[in-house]
Amino acid sequence: MQRLVEAYDTAIARVERAGDAALPLLARFVFAATLLVYFWTSALTKLGDGALGFLRPSVGAHAQIFPRQIEAAGYDLSQLTPFHWLVVTAGTWAEFVLPALIVLGLATRAAALGMIGFVLLQSLTDIYGHGLSDAKTLGAWFDPAPDSTIMDQRLFWLFILCFLVVKGAGALSLDELLRRRMAPVSP
Image (tube, rainbow, N blue to C red; front, top):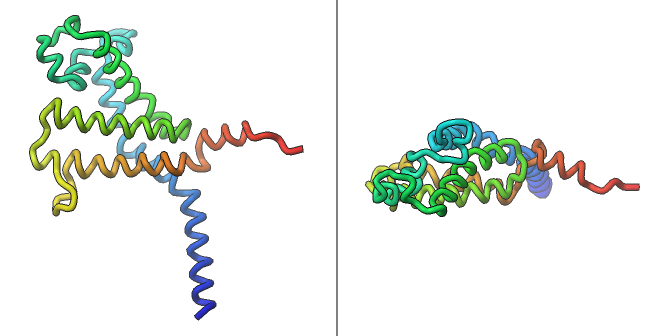
């Protein structure tokens, strides 16, 4: 019986070591496969016209992020404050930059933490700003329907991001490459 337990422990230790190496890369792959294009497509809808569109977010960008304020202003951007411009511009840039950093494995923990904040704010804006509070969209945990947009899907998003905050990008990442290059050389 002792040999069986030892064999089991040895096998589990190998699985854990393999998981420590493979799971961060898999988490980044899952993020890229399911969320990268989603966030970049969303960010593209926020860009204003012309070459400096990344500095002048569209009316639609403001409507996505500050729906009640832009409606109250009659969709006239000049009625909004510099704070609104700053939040919308930063949010637009975040939708481009943070997902790219995660996929590349560069500053992964910080980027994943930033994406957690982004997803939480996105969810609150959807619920309170856009009024997406119907049962199908909002959903509930521990119910028989696993496909609500906010409670169910975004919980999976947050889990992947939390995993990356805790475990980092893994061995196949720019974080690891930089760590190796920055490590002191042993004499």
